[in-house]
Image (cartoon, rainbow, N blue to C red):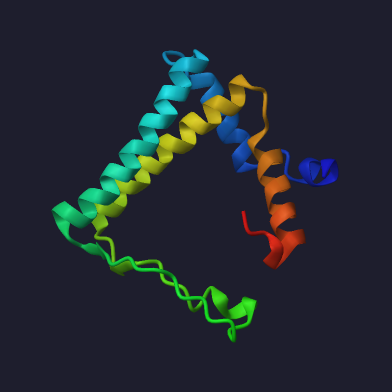
Length: 138
């Protein structure tokens, strides 16, 4: 894995993590970062909810997922529903992208405070999912 890291040392993930470390001054306490991370998640939920209840560009039509045993696992993802009907409008997409960006910012700030490399974490999770394949069900 360190060889992969050397090849992509100047990755966007690393540069973003360094930038967050430089610009985050006001909310530098771990408690501030945790609360801002939770707030960001709530704002994503709220923005998505408003896409349904305010704008109406999408609908959520949820029901129990039907997993038929005769469908091979490799084709299962094509036979389960997202429960989303419609397409998110450009205005709501921009709002959600902004809120998701905030979440990434504060997740990165948390990683910085704990001295955790997001790149290494991403590589580990990718390798785990890639290795386990269909058995990666977490």
